[in-house]
Amino acid sequence: MTGLREVLEAHVRDGALPGAVALVAREGRTECVAVGDAEAGGGTPMARDSLFRIASLTKPVTAAAVMVLVEEDRLELDAPVRRWLPELASPVVVRTPRSPVDDVVPAVRPITVEDLLSFRAGYGFPSDFSLPAVGLLFGELRQGPPQPRHVPPPDEWMAALARIPLLYQPGEAWLYHTCSDILGVLIARVSGRPLPEFLAERIFVPLGMEDTGFTVPGDRLHRFTGYYRGRPDGGPPEPVDAPDGQWSRPVAFPSGGGGLVSTADDWCAFGRMLLAGGRAADGRALLTPGSVRQMMTDRLTPAQRAGGELFLEGQGWGFGGSVDVEPRDPWNVPGRYGWIGGTGTAAHVVPSTGTVTVLLTQLELGGPNPPALMRDFWRYATGA
Image 1 (cartoon, rainbow, N blue to C red):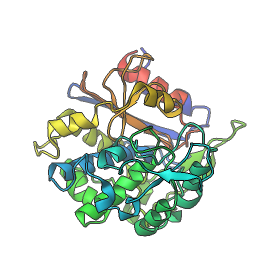
Image 2: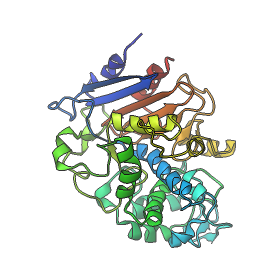
Image 3: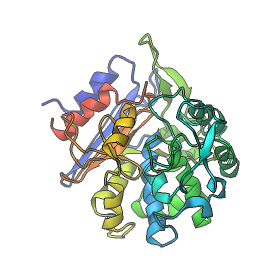
Image 4: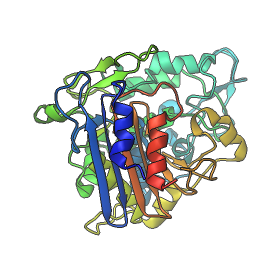
C-alpha cells in the first residue's frame, strides 16, 4: 500500500505544490508527514509545526464557540439575532435571486442563531456568483479569498452588510461562507470580548492550541509558510502572501469564516475534542456531547443540498462544517464532519472510526471542489 509520504510527494515532486503537512490520528496512533518546502523555490523545509493559513477550517471552530455561548444560556438557537446584531433587525430579500438589488421584499421572519450556524440565513454564495446580490458580498464585504488587511472593522462591516439584501428568505436555502463571518461578530458582541480573545480563552488554551490565532507573532514567523496561487500553464506557483505579509500584524476584522492560522497538531486537538464528546485531553469539558452532536448533524433538506452542489458535492451541512450523508465516493464515510479551506487545507473527524485527518498546503484552491491531492489523501486516510 502507498504510504502517506508517497501520497504527498507525488504532488510536490513536479514543483506545482511547494510542500504539505498531513496528519492521520486513529486508535491512539498519530501519523504525521511533512514534505517539500515552506516557501516556493526552496529554503526552509516543511516541518510538522509549520504554520498555515487554514482559511475555512476556521468555520467549525467558530461554530463550537457559538455552542459554548448556547450552553451558558447566553444564546438560544431559535432566538432572533437582532438583539445583538441590530443591523439585521429588518432584513429585506431580493424578489428573486436574479432580481436587481433594489427589487426587494421584507423577510418573512427574523434571522435566528441556528440560521447562521446552518448557513441558511439568506446571506452567502450560491452556485451562481454572477447574481447581483452576490456581487455586493465581494465588493462591499471583501468576501472570497482571505485578505485580512483589506476588511473593515466589525461595526463598519456589519453596517455594510445591512445594506445588502438577502438572496433567499431565512431558512430557505443553504449559502456558503458569509454566515460564519456574521457569527464571529455575534460571538464578540454576546461575550463582550474581541473574537480572538474569546476563542483563545474558551477553546485554544484549554485544548493546548498554542499556535492558533488570527496573526503570527514575530518570534514564530520563521515557521510560517508562504501562500500561493497555481498558474493556468502549470508553471511555478504565483505568490499571494509572504510570511511577513497580511497575517503578521493584528487585523481589524478577525474573520470567523476564514481568518485563522494554525498547525496540523493544533487542529487535530480540536478534532479530538469533538470525537471525545466535547472534552479536552485532560478531561476538561468545553462542550457537552449533545452540543457536539448538534454540530455534526446534517441540517439540510435534499433540495438544499442540491442547491449547494457546487460546494457540497452531495454532502450535508451541520454547524460550521459538512456532514457526509451517503457513501457517494470511496472516501465519503457517513457521519464524517469537517471542511476544506480555500488556501489548500482540509480537516475532518470520523466518529465511526475515531479518526482525525488534517491536510495543510500553501496552494490556493482553483475552485470550490477538492483537488486531486485531497482526494488521494482521503483515500489513504480511509483505506479506500
